[in-house]
Length: 136
Image (spheres, rainbow, N blue to C red):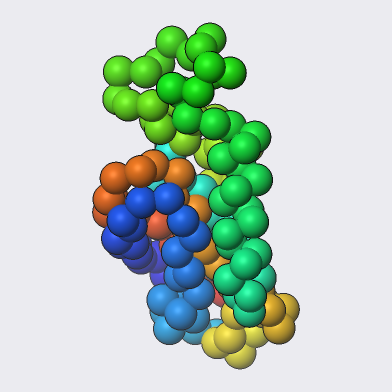
């Protein structure tokens, strides 16, 4: 069983997709998710306190600042804007695929866990996430 989700983003942030995935899975097995882009990531993170997402964004922005920051003067891939190469670096550091167990049609996530697309670019995008459910 396979599908593809389209996630509309409107700039940097964590976009929760748990509900879309949960509505799609069936039976018992494992679902694999794979983002089909090189400037965003997939993560499982806390979904109870929005401060977690803000702090994650602040951390990665501090770790990998925009290409127009003097600390990033060494970058050569800058033709697509000052956020592009830093987005590729963040995507190389974070997962682009996830696997989540499914039991009796339910994602086996922890109480406060959610599945997120982590958008690293400044402008709006329509991101594609391929999903495959493999039965047990």
